[in-house]
Length: 90
Image 1 (cartoon, helix red, strand yellow):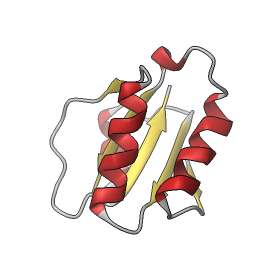
Image 2 (cartoon, helix red, strand yellow):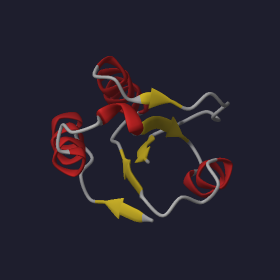
Image 3 (tube, helix red, strand yellow):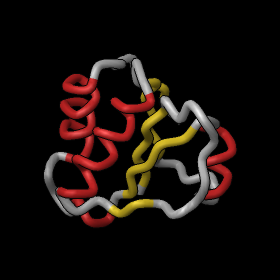
Image 4 (cartoon, helix red, strand yellow):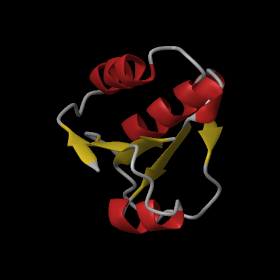
């Protein structure tokens, strides 16, 4: 599990693009959460797991929507209030 240091929307998007590399984007899942540990458990504790603590919940949602638009899967599940964390997993 890797907490990445970027917090701004453009920086998070750039970091995700670098990790994913534009290849097989459809195998990746993107989501937002207020509790990274619980969400990772819900995914079955994957070994490929990156997350960022965005400056705001809106930034996290913007990043999630952006990558869903590019073909990433969305994880269906409830998140709590203040879901400032955005994550990707494979």
